[in-house]
Length: 169
Ligand code: HEC
Image 1 (cartoon, protein in one colour):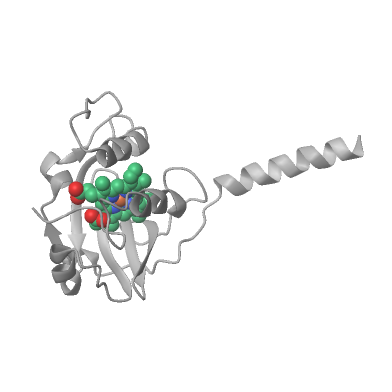
Image 2: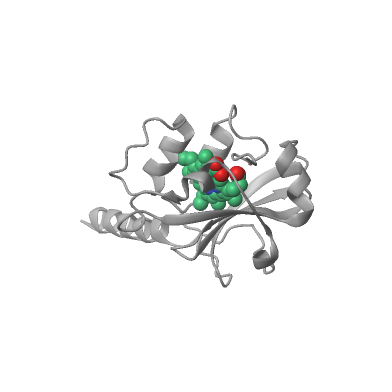
């Protein structure tokens, strides 16, 4: 019986843990509003749609992105912008992966008022999720977890370079 209670306690604590926020190691770029908005494949589409949208004609990574985020809000995440730190613009355009340390790239989910932020440290990318006013809402698991960002941004090697997936159009 004691063991059973311990097991239940263990499960409950773990559930709480997986739902908890897991602050990212990204430092919030407070000056993000002055960053450069760029045109990419995704901004050309204009928005991340809901789960009913037919995205079968898009490259697999975009299908996977829609699949990951279509349900975060009824009707889909909605309109997006890609913002690049002005000093990182050249690297973004060239896709040379030469990003300086710190936050460099943002996927702005405008309707959700959320910023997906990619930061670099000695060239290695890391990921965080913030509200527009800088609250770190990176989750410990699920679609807003840094590990989820990493699995796609690093997993699609043919498509993404040093954490950068999109290209300037
Ligand atoms: C299933 C794949 C996938 C996941 C998961 C994902 N992304 Fe992306 N992300 C993309 C793709 C594809 C683009 C490029 C879209 C475009 O502009 O054409 C992108 C674009 C971005 C950009 C703009 C710069 C760039 O790389 O082009 C940032 C910043 C970004 N994502 C951060 C994040 C963060 C932070 C997370 C986790 C919360 C995340 N992403 C999760 C696929 C993904």
